[in-house]
Length: 147
Image (cartoon, rainbow, N blue to C red; front, side, top):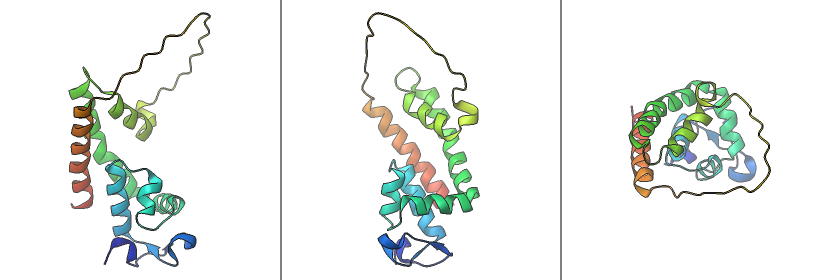
């Protein structure tokens, strides 16, 4: 039986999506594995038959599980930044900034005015860095979801 079809806690599912099923701990673990693999919150929730809002509400009522998940991702993200700082550290830094804003987010606002032209430079993300990051996320996912 899939995680989405099991009943457990009293957390309700968006009835327009999945009837009267409830979010279980196993459902939430599957949701977190999807998030760790790079899925959006909406996609990870919908693959289980839940709305994104339902998962966010469950997360707010069960903050320890979410904090444990984020804590386990923190060290590998820092490791990625260190290992790839010469090539492509930005994706891991982006994750840290948004997951741990009190520690990594820019807290100052700088307003700059200029006249003239602006030159834009774009850099493609290195495929090797993405693959290594995905591998690290899979390792953390297995630790979080299969202790």
